Length: 171
Ligand SMILES: CC(C)(COP(=O)(O)OP(=O)(O)OC[C@H]1O[C@@H](n2cnc3c(N)ncnc32)[C@H](O)[C@@H]1OP(=O)(O)O)[C@@H](O)C(=O)NCCC(=O)NCCS
Image (tube, rainbow, N blue to C red; front, side, top):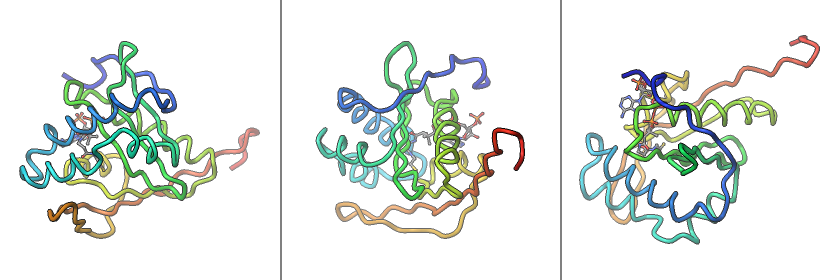
């Protein structure tokens, strides 16, 4: 079924009260959605790297974090750091491939452009790479990151944002 057949999530900024559910979404997304790209030990190291609510809340409060909701409950989130780095994007497996990440990326790209960002950057997991490619992000290089003795590959990807038109229509 195409993503357009599913309910569109509503979006709002992160609230401190979201943190427990977002940590559960993050854990489930890594454990279940990255199975084809990372082995058990790699997934476990990644999933448990943020193992308390305080640490996650601190990282989400540093930049701009949007939460996607369906039926009033959180189903995914995206975090944009100052300087234009998308450093977290997680969607609950129950709603994977229904367009939740796309809605979050659409919104964060619009907000970043409105704030004057010229480019966005992400270190895309191998799972997320097709999503970012489809959105026009260009791969620049591979990274290997070490988490708790495990080595995980990802890809630095960059997108040049379209400049915002002036209110009177002039470029
Ligand atoms: C990557 C992730 C955020 C995608 O979320 P999602 O809500 O399922 O993505 P969308 O439904 O918006 O997907 C839009 C398009 O991206 C591509 N895409 C998304 N997930 C994909 C996957 N696992 N494999 C191949 N293409 C994928 C497809 O082109 C998809 O369109 P389609 O479903 O019509 O084919 C989600 O799988 C996730 O949380 N993964 C685990 C954590 C992770 O890797 N986070 C990224 C850190 S950089």
